[in-house]
Image 1 (cartoon, rainbow, N blue to C red):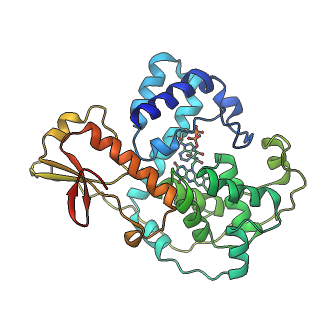
Image 2 (cartoon, rainbow, N blue to C red; image 1 turned 30 degrees about the vertical axis):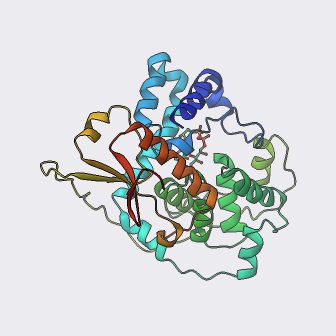
Image 3 (tube, helix red, strand yellow; image 1 turned 90 degrees about the vertical axis):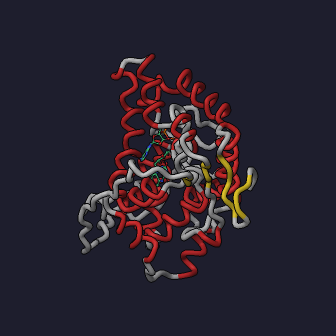
Length: 307
Ligand SMILES: Cc1cc2nc3c(=O)[nH]c(=O)nc-3n(C[C@H](O)[C@H](O)[C@H](O)COP(=O)(O)OP(=O)(O)OC[C@H]3O[C@@H](n4cnc5c(N)ncnc54)[C@H](O)[C@@H]3O)c2cc1C
């Protein structure tokens, strides 16, 4: 899989990067994704390392020509750092038990709302396990402001199906659309914007375009991040699927007797994942194990080279 990711990365750098800043906002449909990188499924697992990717791009391009793409990658880095410093935002998201109308929710997750673009995106999300960034914004906005459903359920629905599902990027983007991340500023999906940036594929979509932002009373203070005790030498290290880059870490892994990879099943997850997403994560971890000799899965029955 590292080779597949490398190939996809090079293809984008050679073909898509040049026009990224002018075309990236268009969703031309699932058959035509050349205007964006499609690398998030790798970047979100750090199968492709953000900084490595940026260094590689800058080694062959002037910053001005590729700045927009680099800024987007840094959105991910920013969201991660933001949530790391405020873990209670995640806990509250997981524990939330908001009121909602069950029939409305079922219509939304089954793509039966009658809003043609939204219903198509539900199918696309389930089939492709991906949505374009602009579409994610429209989707979340329609979910919250036109369908009146709680943002937390939408964020969980995305996490379930996205191959790139990421605690920080996903939760905080949903909060941003709702108007509680940048407080008082919500993102409104507009018919004209959807029409233009889907290249006229969706017209005359009737949406609530005058909704006010949601309100959040709670303030989340900054927390210190617990430092690792680097002087303490452990025999084992445990990695989740969200940190799989190798690059310059081979000698770091060699310092341990065992590198254990954990892949939680749905019984042990706070947000249940689609089988295709779990399968993809397993494949990424298997590739890591093939490259690192002292790496293995940690299963219920103990360590093993296979899951
Ligand atoms: C409601 C909502 C939910 C989202 N959930 C996730 C998620 O779970 N995981 C995730 O990785 N991204 C998420 N995003 C951000 C963004 O939509 C995806 O990263 C992007 O669409 C992935 O496609 P790409 O790799 O082709 O992106 P490109 O446009 O090619 O961007 C390159 C890379 O930059 C990063 N990036 C781009 N835009 C953003 C952004 N707005 N925020 C954070 N990082 C960004 C990603 O790592 C991406 O791979 C979400 C956005 C919204 C509005």
